[in-house]
Image (cartoon, one colour):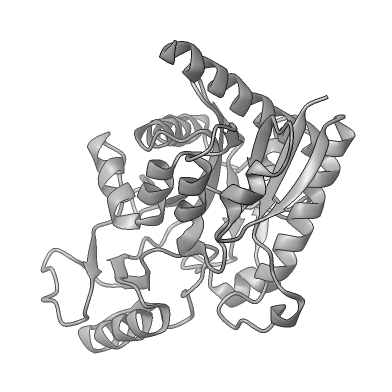
Length: 330
């Protein structure tokens, strides 16, 4: 019987449902951990829950006969610590599900991942990063522009006024993002077309899952944190698009996945421009896995994976990869 440690971000009861920046976060953590644990148990694994903390390495060392860790942790107190947790995992000898430290850093720093997209000829909107808000605006940027935190996910920092049409509003929104989130603001050209999300599963020859379309009901839909928390958009999977476009998006997705050296799984956000060219917006190197809710398991289900089979496959992929890496080092 394989022994799996399930690593997760612990959310204190006193802090639940009070963070206006991430109103759905605490609930999603709870349901995701319970779902993964149930799936692992259904496959006959022994499961030890591991809440993330500053003494994580000691906690892991105290668990006997641990075969693999399922990393479902987005940080100890916030998402920006997602890579820090992985760094601690890399300091011990137990294999873990999910990408390496370098991959998480590249994914969390959106400007770097966008540069990597371009290095393998994947279209991505023009952008500029603001560190103080006083920088000169790049003349190549064309309005409308969207302003968002550089290191966040789950639509954090995206609101109805995030799309701006002039310099005054741009400066105001950039200053707000820097002040509230204590990080640089990413400004990019707002692509107005249809929006999709793409799941990739695997390692050496990754599988691109059926594409999921986000249905806003208008041409300029925007996934704000409020809309995401209220589930106010529709979805269609597989997306109703031409086979040619499906092939193009999947080809780009596999290239993006490999460019960042992702492991096991990742999810990529895409929007079509006015010429129906798929623009890759960002990559999530630790996408949500809440059963019957998160996009990744929905796409996997359309591909033929039950939730239990999906979690099981991720564990086996991680062990297989660790064994290959071990053989290379012998």
